Amino acid sequence: MVRSVNVAIVGAGLVGSAFINQLQSLRSHAITYNVILIARSTKALVSKSYAPLPLANWSQDLAASSPASGLSPGDLAAYLEKSPLPVILVDNTSSDALAKVYPVFLSQGVSIATPNKKAFSSELGLWNSLFSSAANFAAEPKGKGFLYHEATVGAGLPVISTIKDLVATGDEVVKVEGIVSGTLSYIFNEFSTLSGGAPVNFSDVVNKAKELGYTEPDPREDLNGLDVARKLTILARLAGLDVQSATSFPVQSLIPRPLEEIEAVSEFMAKLPEYDGKMEETRAKAAEEGKVLRFVGKIDLSGESAQKVKVGIEKYDAAHPFASLKGSDNVIAFYTKRYGKNPLIIQGAGAGSEVTAMGVLGDVLKIAERV
Ligand code: NHO
Image (cartoon, rainbow, N blue to C red):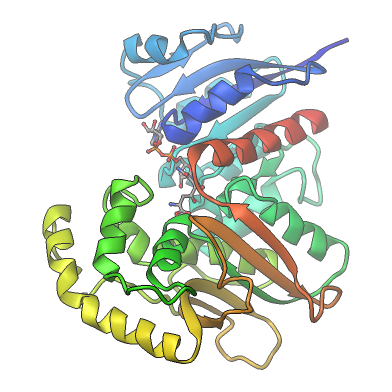
């Protein structure tokens, strides 16, 4: 008999749209995935009877739907609790409010798959309550939902599942080092190269990254290092560190201080070239040593370092795998007791809606096999 699960999709932007398209072209037919809800901030399609929604024209149907006046996290929880089939909430938003109520969903048996970093990188109390509420971690799993968040670090790359497996099988994480921002990967791969060609201005590279759609609409959201800090918080916590929040360790911001308070993105971009000199100095100094600059997150549990987690610019020589990175690829190296001198390295596209949606859909498939 074919089993069925219900799927509620909140957030239908870049990742949400790619997720819905990939769900429609699933090759496995052992389990049927019934989409019962698709919502964005101001619109929602909700199947009151829990019958599957037609997906052929979901985008137009959603646009034509009446404003979702009643879709608070509380209303969503009440709706999902009554689902006659096991239900998976796919949170494709970056909403803090929704993330805060994950423990409620989980404790009422709703499973969650998400690329939203908020729940996992905010205060430590929320992290702890998440894991005591989820069936895959709680001492008393009965009646609880499963929680998967592969795409919170490295998009579709198997980063979260790898670190979880290392720890669960008794390995000890000694050090994690990674380039986990696709945007900052691109910027530094272009700015600081091994080829030694004519130097480019840092602001020109930021501009190009913006034009190519690699940055957030406001590039300061990439340049402030917070996205990397959130990803490092998640990895450090999975490695066993009680990191209080994504702002509780040193994070180097690439935004020149005088430009922090500027409101308009256009004004920020216009003034950024005034600060190219400092970045060029750092790049040239590294080049003299035969090294390149990369924006990296580091977790050091070896006991030698007082500062266990930090995020910022580091220098690497030509032979290092981080030096030859291309485009907007991510790379993460795990040094553990088992993977001692030669780390376990995961590398590949770590940004973009298709690969992120793949990470989320992979989680949905894993949950569906377990519920
Ligand atoms: P969008 O396109 O802004 O879509 C968000 C959707 O959520 C919209 O439909 C909005 O209406 C809806 N929404 C917001 N709040 C809501 C609420 N309370 N109720 C209902 N709907 C609500 O954002 P994306 O790009 O689709 O991102 C969605 C999630 O995936 C975010 O949590 C984001 O952080 C995460 N994510 C996205 C990407 C990406 O490529 N777009 C990546 C990873 C995670 O691999 C990517 C990455 O890391 C890129 C990163 N900048 C890098 O490495 O450089």
